[in-house]
Length: 115
Image (cartoon, rainbow, N blue to C red; front, side, top):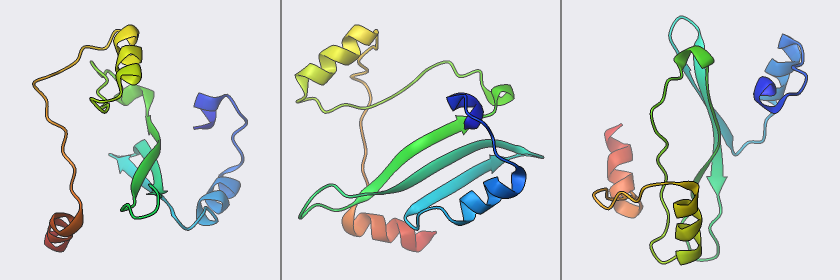
């Protein structure tokens, strides 16, 4: 993360202390083989009164040796024409053959119970 942002990387113990004292609502997942090759940091998101919370992916890092991706995928609301125009101008191709899924409510609870 420090390399990406171009900032000083503190000593190992300071990094560990920072992880141990991170905000309670934040989580970190690691991907590893014989070494750590990726990291995802995420936390709970508050969508507003009366709406169910979700989680927000804050950072996703993959070691340079593990890269080689051939694409970037994302979603956008069909009703947000301004955003769609922006993504079109970036050069993104709309993939009308894809379907966006969301698990919430009872179905999310059923899936969680299976884990």
